[in-house]
Length: 140
Image 1 (cartoon, rainbow, N blue to C red):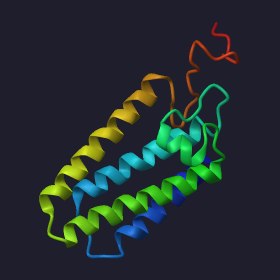
Image 2 (image 1 turned 90 degrees about the vertical axis):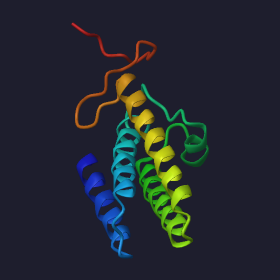
Image 3 (image 1 turned 135 degrees about the vertical axis):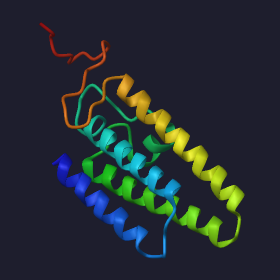
Image 4 (image 1 turned 30 degrees about the vertical axis):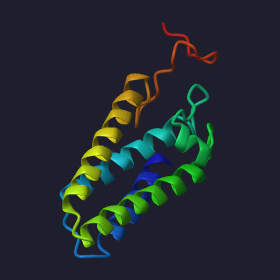
């Protein structure tokens, strides 16, 4: 299921990139990070009893234990919104602000990815449940 979700997300994001003559390496970096974040959210909060969505903004939108559909909708919507903001800043000629926007969002998303990995969320492998999880698997 996760692989199908990833393929669908990439197809949608790839389609968004082709709407304009778009060649922005920073946006591609952020969109790639965002797909990884969406996959982490799907693999953890939507699929694992030991994890929940802890970002206050995201959890207000999709909930602490979102469905896979909510995660997909959030991922596609937020990816599109980021693209629209970046494209709009560039269309207005605000290159410096667009660069700061891209840098801030790339750094923020990279920090989230690292945090998720550090707490045991794995894409394509079993998550490592936190010590506080009452359903923690016994390690031998």
